[in-house]
Image 1 (spheres, rainbow, N blue to C red):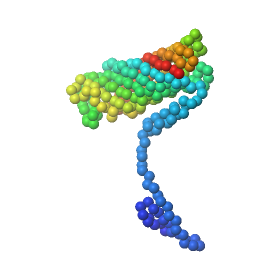
Image 2 (image 1 turned 30 degrees about the vertical axis):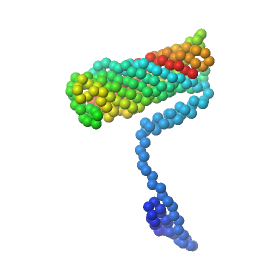
Image 3 (image 1 turned 60 degrees about the horizontal axis):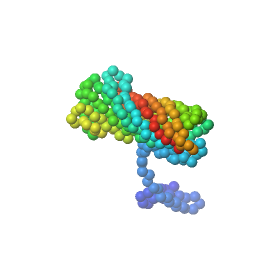
Image 4 (image 1 turned 90 degrees about the horizontal axis):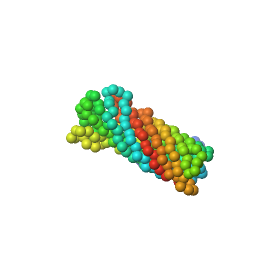
Length: 253
């Protein structure tokens, strides 16, 4: 068997059995495309989310949650110096597998943050440059994530127009924006995405009430607490996690 490269990407094989034969094939080059894992997860989630809209036993809602967040640390080297107010807005999707039990998910954009003091000076990569932050300088983080929760929701039967619910589950957040602010003149709400881990993973739990407006529409009011498992920052000297307390305000359809 003789293999000939006639032209770019055109391969021909010349062989012999009882007769001579020639077979040719065109090879199309394949480009190496490295798709980030977080993008694949997000695409799959949105696909299943849209497909689920046609399922029975499903309720769709919208929410705008005022929230307060802060960043506790596992090391005495880093001290918490206050939290930050923000908003979490998006869609809520409840898929009921029994009368009072549902899988609860959704997709939203969440703004969180907090302030930290570092006992020693630290070097951060800000606006594509290394910047040295002196010791005991207050650093305020302003972060924005795409939030994908997944949990279980339990509710009571309706009393009058009111239903009480509770829920617990896991929360995955994908970083889309990260800014830091200090009292230094050269660092004022500057991009610091390289200093923040791209994914934040944790748990959530909470509860509240839903007030029926008739048919399948109801107002929703509750309180949700979220606690992160993973390190928010990339500094190896400590572990900073995210804590958030949200006032759940929404409408279910």
